[in-house]
Length: 114
Length: 118
Image (cartoon, rainbow over the protein chains, first blue to last red):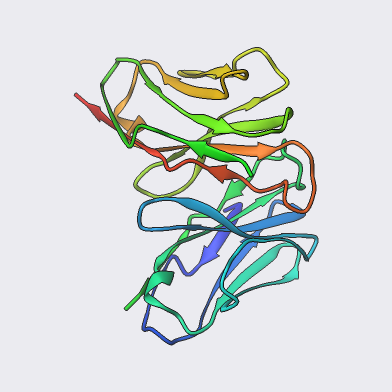
């Protein structure tokens, strides 16, 4: 059973479209995250939710909106896609928000905007 | 804000040899966690090893060990008896100990691509 799953794994779309990436974890964790890995492989936090409450919101364009319907799911919706949004997006989860809580990563979603 | 620096964009090692990947970080905190993650071509992020800053003893996991120098803010990863399957991107990461609204995130370095040759 996959611990942290993301759908889709690959997403190719045109500029201006709206798309969503879904994430689900079956670990019973309270905290979930979205990270973005750019073309130079740099990984950076975007958002984090703890028990459905937004606790981290880095400097991300407001075209990106996370939604957590329950603590096992954290979806990422992106409006008006731009070329610069092309990246790999990783979902992760951890038991809590403590530094000692290991973060488990999903397989990533490669988004390509043409 | 914390920063993590990996000064080696690429490294190469021969199979069965030992290689050390460097990482330095900057923080004003005294209690934190440091991690090394491996990202193979499959792009899955895999935790290799972690170190608690309050522990003086260096962490080890089989062929992987770290050299943690808190005063120097240095956290290098040593891979012994390198195997072809070790070829990957390796990321050093920092995480604060305290849980606050912004403490739970991982801050990553820019990564080191490790090649393993026969």
